[in-house]
Amino acid sequence: MSNMLGARRRLCLLQVVLLLFAAVLLVADACLTSEYRRKLEATVEMPLDADVFRVPEGYNAPQQVHITLGDQEGTSMIVSWVTANELGSSTVMYSEASPDPEKMELCVEGTHTRYDYFNYTSGFIHHCNLTNLKYSTKYYYAMGFGHTVRSFCFTTPPMPGPDVPFKFGIIGDLGQTFDSNTTLSHYEANGGDAVLYVGDLSYADNHPLHDNTRWDTWARFVERSAAHQPWVWTAGNHELDLAPELGELAPFKPFAHRYPTPRRFAPAATPFWYSVRIASAHVVVLASYSAYGKYTPQWEWLRAELARVDRAATPWLIVLVHSPWYSSNAYHYMEGETMRVQFERWLVAAKADLVVAGHVHAYERSHRVSNVAYDIINGRCTPVRNRDAPVYVTVGDGGNIEGIADNFTQPQPGYSAFREDSFGHATLEIRNRTHAYYAWHRNQDGDNVVADGVWLTNRYWMPTDDDTS
Ligand SMILES: [Fe+2]
Image (tube, rainbow, N blue to C red; front, top):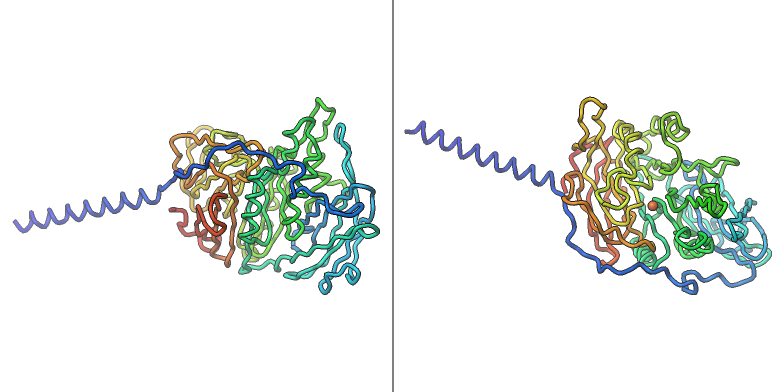
C-alpha cells in the first residue's frame, strides 16, 4: 500500500514538473501581436509653407544644417549645409568657449558641391570636416560668413570604452508628413545623444520627377535635431533616385551629394557601408542596395571589419541595414533574404547584439534566432533559438507618406517577439558592458511611455537568455 501511495506521489510530482516545464516553454516562446490599433488614416505630407520647412531669414542664409561623425573614433564631425542664393563661404568657425561667432577661435575650410537632377539644380552643398576634437566636449560652431551667419552646438561622443553609457535614438523611414513630425518630436522629448538612422529619408522620389525640392524641405525639417547631434546614415531604396526615364542613371545622386559618411568623405570614394565606434558600441552600417555577393567590395569589407571588432574595447556590436532580414510583415516580404543568406552566419559567429532595419513601415522585434544550418542537402531551413544570435528589430515606422504596413502575416511566427503596425521610434540605452535597455515608443503614447521594452545582455560579456519577453 505504502509503495502504491509513494508511486502516486511520484506520479503527481512528475505531472507538476511536466506542467511547470510546459509553462516555462510557453513563456520562452512568448510572441505578441499587439492589440493596439492605430486609427488608420492616410499619412499626409506637411505643406510646403509649414513652419518646419521655413527657410532661415537672411540673404544666402545657411540652411539644412546637419552633422555626422567624420571618422571611426568620434573625434571628427562633418558639418553639412546648403546655401541657396550663391556659393558663399564653406568655412566653419568653432569653439569650446564661445557661442559668439565673432569670438570662435578655430576655423576649418570645407568643400562644396552641387548637382543637377532632371529639371532641378541644387543649391551649393557645403561639407566641412572638423577634426581632432576632444571627446565629450561641447562645441559651438557657425557658418555663413560674408552674408548671414548661423550658429549651433553639438557635444562630441565620449571616448570609446567598455563601460561608457550612451543613449542612441533609432529612427527609420521618416519622410516629412505630420506623423513624421510627431515621431521626431517624440524622439527629441526622449533625448538621445545620437541617431542611428536606418534609411529612407525624404521620399522625394514619390513626387513627380523625383521633386528634389523635397530633399531640401526634409533637411530643413530635421535640422532641429541633426544640427545638434550626429545622425548615422544608412542608405535605403528611396535614396536610389534611379530614373532612366528622366535620364538619371547614377544611383544615389541626391543622397551622395548631400549626406557624407565617414567612409565617403574620402575623395572619389562612394561606398555606403562603413562603421563607427561610439562609446561602448561598434556600429556597422550595411548597404542593402549596393552589391554584397561573394567577392564584392562590401562582402570583402564586412569580413575584414568583423575581424576588427574588439569587444574588450567596444562590447556592443550593432548592425544597421535598410531591408530587414527577419520581418513577418507582408509588405516587402523577404526582400532582405538574399543579404541574410550572405551575411547572417558571420553576425552569429561574431555574436552581434542587435540588428536594426527599416523599410517595412511597422514595428517588430525578434527573439534571438538564427537560420544558418541549411547547406542545400540537409533541409534545415527553419529559424531556431540561438543565444549567439542578435535581436532583430524593424523600425521603418517613422511615418512617411506611404503609410502604415498594416498587413502582418498570420499566424505570428515563433521567432517574432512583438509586432505592431503603428508609427514610432526606438531608443537604446547602453549602461555598461553587460546591460542595455532597448525601448520602442509608439507615437500615440506620452513621451516616456515604453510600448515595447527589453533589457538586452551583451552577447560577448553576458550571453544570458534575455529574449523571453
Ligand atoms: Fe525602404
